Length: 121
Image (cartoon, rainbow, N blue to C red):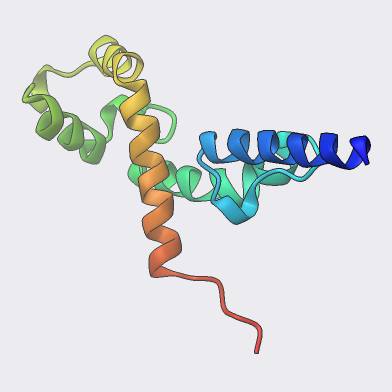
């Protein structure tokens, strides 16, 4: 009996960690799998990486030159695109990393909303 209680407590901890990482509630980590293996790449990171891949099209090795990302930074901060260089880009990324991570999590949610998994009938 105590072992079952310990497992249920661990499950609630794993679920809270999984949702804190941005994983959907159903994709929360399982008891016996590491957090990254259970919720990591496929359910959480795929949509974020897809957005970044599409947003840096043509400038993947130099994202600070991407017109789309420069436009997004300009509309977010008010700094003109012409004034954003390498250092300003990475300074912005570091300074706003929490909001950027939240934005990428939101794009994943919208992607899952627009393209839901088919239900098995």
